[in-house]
Amino acid sequence: MSGSVTDERSDADCPACGQRGLRVFFGEDSVPQNSCLLLDDPATAAGFPRGRLEIAFCHGCGFVTNTAFQPGSAEYSQRYEETQGFSGRFMAFAQELARRWVADYNLGNRTCLEIGCGKGEFLIEMVKAGAGNCIGIDPGVHPERIEDPEADQIEWIIDFYDERYTHIDADVVICRHTLEHIPNVYEFMSGIRRAVGDRPETVVLFELPNVARILHEVAFWDIYYEHCSYFSLGSLARLFRRTGFEVVELSREYDDQYLLIAAHPSPITPGAGEPLVAEDDMDELRQGVDNYRSGYQKLTDEWRDRLNALRADGGKAVIWGSGSKGVSFISNLDITDEVVAAVDINPHKWGKFMVGSNHEIVAPAALTEIKPDLVVAMNPIYLKEIQADLDALGVDAELVGL
Ligand SMILES: [Zn+2]
Image (cartoon, helix red, strand yellow):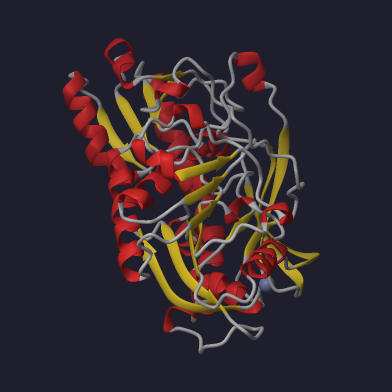
């Protein structure tokens, strides 16, 4: 079921600032509730539970949220496979970020807690960069898969982070690509602030997607059920201040796809310090919402027409990337046979099926058999490494990025 733009007032309170009256600007009636689960057969994949999107903008703080999200409905477990750690480009970014954080915030031999550590790759990089003992918490971590010697310095906890873990005494709290999965962001950040307590030297480091880019580029594949909370630099900094943090650094990274924030606990709430220049983005966000509303139909029509035309000519298209962006791309276009398979470089996904659309997930090597005419990369930042893989396999297909 494809989505549609709308313009309605919701009576819901903003989960970030509490203001009443959000503006719902995009809706989709039936989307898979998860996009990174590994499913063993097409029937399970096709019949996977579905939910609704009602994507709304807060005029008070710039926060974007899915007002139809049902807490607890998305599954995060050991069959959740979100890692991008098999990409050289992504790992180079993670390594550089770990080195930068350790150097900039003097984290040598400091104790790091990572909330939502995924498969643990980033904590390994933190230890390599000089951090001390680390604790990683995630319901989807597989300690048995981690062979790096640095893991000796890391304690893994297979669980969600909540008030039961506030006793963990860490010098650094890291949280990457997790806050966007949490509906009640004010409560979550307040909980972290309470856990940090009266230790002003603690560093809090977050990384998450940048909604300003999604709105500006009409990146409809980046809006999906698992992500119920969407931030810009401004809305993120405003939430941090409101929950008692002093924001010390804000930046956009990875071709503007990600936001980074660094903060310290503040003795006062809202947190001390003047707003940074980068936080002044309410006008940009309002324009972004209008841009998304006016561009969505045209862009989805163009992709659907292109894939239909290729199939009508007897050609074959595959998508490269079977995770959330791929699931959302196919769901928004409401297509099936127009794409013959989804390629993924993560070997744990091969032979499994994509949630919702039941496309089989194949290894890059399978393309020598499939012989696609078109490869659509779900993230253009990987075009260079995908082209290198295609060249190495001798696959002569047109490669395009979203
Ligand atoms: Zn708000």
